[in-house]
Amino acid sequence: MSVLRTLFAHNDWARDKVMELASPMSDEQLDRPFEMGPGSLRRTVQHMWACEQHWLNRWRGMAGLGTEPNLAMDVLWDRFRKTAVERDALFDSVGEPGFSNKISFTADSGETHTFPLGDMVLHVSNHGVHHRAQALNMLRRLGVKVPGIDFLHLRVERPTVEFDEAGRAKLGEMGMAPGATLAAPDELDVETIREYYRYSDWATLLLCDHAEKLTDERLDRAFEMGIGTLRKTLLHIYDAEAWWCANWTDAENKAYQQLPPTTSIAELKVLLETHIAARDGFFATLTAAKLQEVISAEVTPDLLLRFRLGETMLQLPPHGTHHRAQCRNMLRHLAVETQEIDYLDWYDTTQR
Image (tube, rainbow, N blue to C red; front, side, top):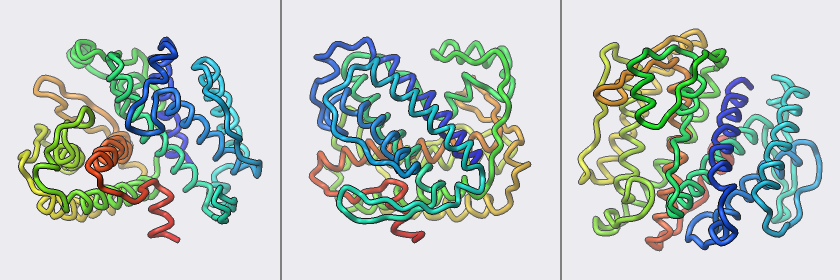
């Protein structure tokens, strides 16, 4: 429950970052068509809210939402906040044991599904990450300078570990505003974090399976999203994972390393599977107390930051989801049909 609450604290913070940028937009900008996500910035934001409310209704045994016309940004922001208050109240009422309760609902297709509440909650949090990636891309194409909204960007604004003066100054130069007071550390549990990684590994490897069938020309086709090409974006997911894992397991700070841009997808899959096995071996040694230990990481050659181990672990699965959203859109533009890779798709495939 504590991990899920932490992920939703990030969800709400990142949502507000997107809404702050979207709210001043004209109707023409909000409704400009984009070949990604629900098709426009307004529709993407409205879809994000509607899904949060729709799932909350399911958890409370209520009917789903009907179709609504395009809503104004101030109306949507109010609805986001109201939904968050009601969601947190539900979490308070069910308590820790309630997250294991199984809830059944009938989907729009007429099929009945049953999932544990905790898994549905993680699905909704992860779903928001996916669509915020699309919203940021749309904002960027509308000429807006977008901020970083990864989990560790939240931990810069609301730190639980003190930054030194040099670090604070460098973060300011990079456009970030490190918090002046320390927040209480999150209570994190190892198994929930491991479960999120299991899903993330599955989704990344599935996209690699799709990408492996493409020619080099298609893998390296330029896109205005992600790291610029499908290959580079998939490599970036691995690079971030491998770098953080090196910082977890080695006391000596590691400079950020990148795979050669010509690395084949077949090579990447082997590297991913080797990395996953080594990382899971490290995870097997973890305790809740270990997650609170402070580690340092050389974010850039002149910036060394300190975070709690568990915070850096919560950085990676949403980071992967963010970039997998970009990869799926690139694959669609490359005429590759991909299967759904939301969290509950993984649960349905592997856990049920």
